Image (cartoon, rainbow, N blue to C red; front, top):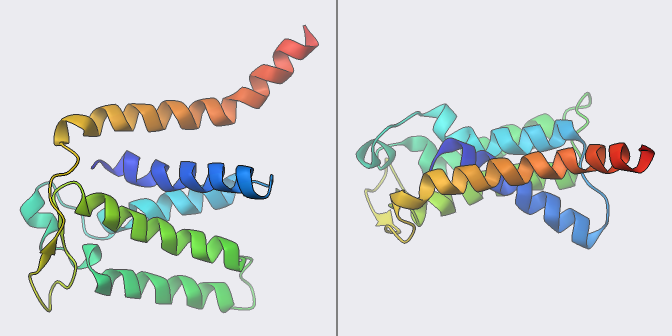
Length: 155
């Protein structure tokens, strides 16, 4: 899948979950952090082919563990303002990226220790660009809708 989808799917999932569960959304800053965490495996070790993804440390459990240690360490420093909910959301976004790649070609989950690949092309590459467009439009309308509603209520 494309990096835009990896960044926006966890943001949209967490946004809808929080709206349904607690009626309280994260701040835009935290959603941007979640988007960055969702894109992190591709940003940490960029790749353009499936073969390159299958030899990527950032697309393995070791990349996930390293990312989790960094996020948890930063969250527990005295000057950090990351709540536990945000920390869990960041780690979940990274995990969701690995899941998405597993259903879109597979990931070598234990690389470099083992070349075992889990997953397959359950989501065809033909759907990747349409998924990006849907994610981008959904995110746009979620954050644009309150402004449109206010504009129409004042007219």
